[in-house]
Length: 172
Figure 1 (tube, rainbow, N blue to C red):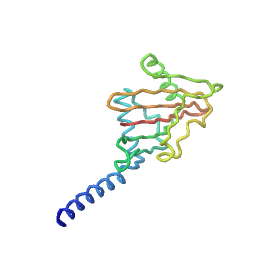
Figure 2: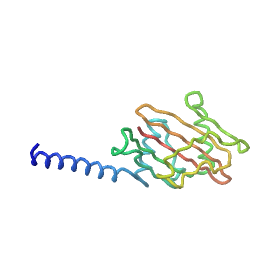
Figure 3: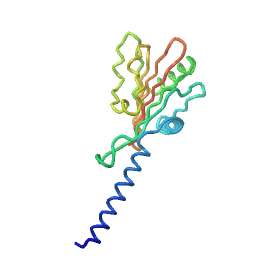
Figure 4: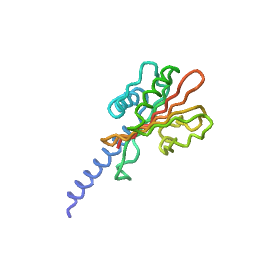
């Protein structure tokens, strides 16, 4: 092979690796309004659920899991923490309970160990604040796997003055 061909192949490989690196850096983490907007879209399309204005976003982060550099499969995950008043929490619990026959839904009293909180291994790198398992209040658990590679897990906790809603979205 001539030097010219080797140089062109090297340039092509370098450009490809550089573009993948830029793409990886730009997509590795997202937070704030972008996460909230994506969560709203997914809840509406996958769960047919729109949270009222009684719910405010406390924290939200997510990003890319996996990489084109070392993994054939990669996906996005989003972690959102919302806070609402007791009335909004009760309304959401009631609405989701009515769907019990169509999705995985359960309500656990405080005396039971909330063993339905799935481990979300990527939360440690994408959302260090994500800790629904530390709550000991009565909770509900809701999960649905939608078509188009989207899954939603929700953990709701009824506190004495408000309700907390942890939402985990996986987009494959």
